[in-house]
Image 1 (tube, rainbow, N blue to C red):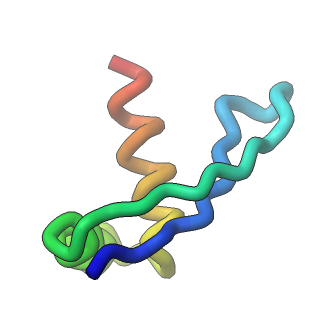
Image 2: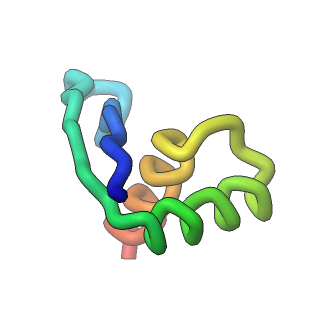
Length: 58
């Protein structure tokens, strides 16, 4: 069973926010939940935004 994430992305404060609907498998949901707890974030969508932001800065 997969979950659907509704993720608002903001590249920077000058760009508009976009909403995305993403399906992820159970294994990824578990990994995101673990990452969320380690980073002390409130939600999985917030965790995805942080991970994407870090990845795109590289």
